[in-house]
Length: 333
Ligand code: AMP
Ligand code: MG
Image (cartoon, rainbow, N blue to C red; front, side, top):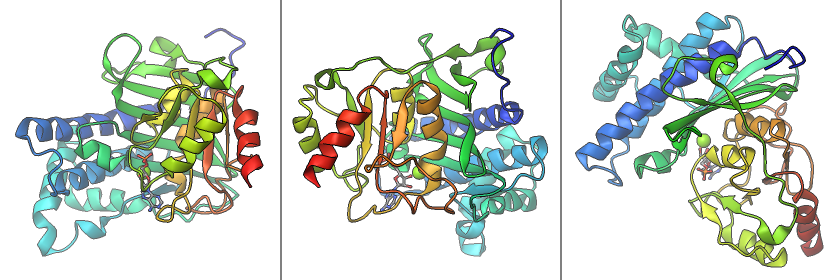
């Protein structure tokens, strides 16, 4: 970075540390799952343990680095309280203590419950998805630890850990970091340096021709209407098959120019979106030179509470193909 680079958001250092710590915990759980050969079994407790440990680690560290800033997070302590949940609670605490040795049960539960902010269009709050893509996590595939900072309804900083994306230097595990107006960078996940020491700037692709568009969408057909995106791909003459992957790693893939388009089309099961599934990812794409809107071309409004209730679906693109996608959608309606 040089002197003309706009200043990174001051909360970013704490956000980076928190996400790296959470990713170490989630990777340890996923790697034990792979070794135990228990992937794709119906037991969801490993993902619960990893999810909750991730939320404890992020929210407790934010409490230290950024005291007084509230948070919206996906989980709370209800699933680990009570005698019947003692096993899951103990397993979660063990994962937390690998990163935060002095954590007490009481402090961990308090951190879990620190994510209940209602959101809204004024003030600042963090937005956390401790494991986005839980189904991918259980399949040993993509997931993300996604942390954003929202100020007055706008995302101003993001740290997104993607353990199954390469960091650009051949190592598995990439941490994407963005600051509004300053840019977006990829950092190695298993490291301790910040943006200034080891961040490599990323930018979206400059493909203009819709036929060359690489489309990504949810692996799970309940999360996006894959038949509508297939019709849209036909209408745009997109030649390649869609790449299906879990989590908001899809935003990172568009941000770094490895795909041009991410479509999320509402299904009957998924009519309105949670803000933690999009906030941190959307800033990555915008700061990389791309564009994010809903299916009507409206910007995503993160000031509506815990849901994106003013928006309908999501389009994230490299920017150049965005208007073509919007016109193809408008022609159907
Ligand atoms: P993806 O991995 O991109 O398919 O998205 C995963 C996210 O989709 C999860 O973290 C959920 O928050 C979200 N999701 C799954 N099912 C639903 C649903 N029925 N309504 C809204 N969001 C959903
Ligand atoms: Mg999620």
